[in-house]
Every structure is written in structure tokens, then in C-alpha cells.
Image 1: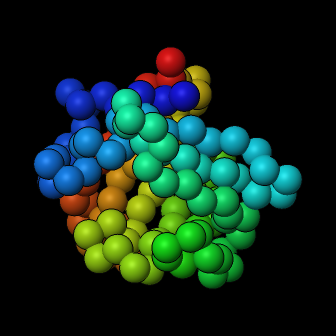
Image 2 (image 1 turned 120 degrees about the horizontal axis):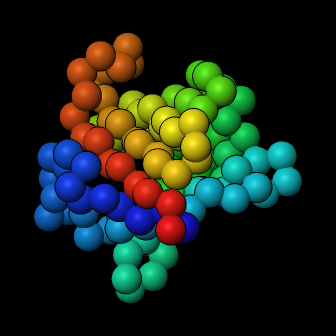
Amino acid sequence: MDSLSTTKSKIVHPDEDARSIQWCTYAADGDRVKVAWGNAEGERGTYTAKCDGSLESSGSTNIRCWQAGSNVVEGEQLSDPKHRYYRRILSSNGKVMSIIWYDDASRRHATDRFVYTKN
């Protein structure tokens, strides 16, 4: 499990987001990856995706994601205007993961940065 590092993160909507994203997990699920997140009260959301660039249903929204480098996944959530475009970067030692949200498809204008450290 990875825990949110509030000192390294930049969260634009802390009242809404910081309470629901205190931890996240990633796990193999056949040919897909299962992503889950939550807080001290428990799991707040989950989805499973291939991240092959195709449009996939993920519960309450549709997502599209793809491998953009050896430790980088990019994607978009189609129903969340505040958090539509993202990039997930895993450090080379596998201990720090950053999820950076952008307001543009070219990923040049970052809005939020959630930094997680491996427990």
C-alpha cells in the first residue's frame, strides 16, 4: 500500500480530495491492473484497466490509459473535469509514485500532484 505524502503533494481541492485519497494500491488482475484508493474509513473507489489505449469502463466513468515509458502511465478520465488528464510516475526504486493531474491533453499545465510513498 502507498500512503499519501501531504508535504510533497500539491492538492488544489484539499477539502474534497485529501480525505478520499490517503492511500492507493496497484495489483495485477489477469491482463489488467486493479487500482484502488481510500482513507482510514476504507476503500473509496476502484477500477481495473488494461492501459492499452482503448476506452474502458471503470465503474462510474470511462477511462483511457497507456504506457508512456518504463515507469510512466498516462491517461484520462472522461467524466471528471477537475481530474481528466493524468500521468503516473513510479520512481526507479519503486518507493515513490506521483500522480500528476493536468488541465490539458498535452499535459503541460499541471493542477494537482499526489505523491505516495510505499509502506
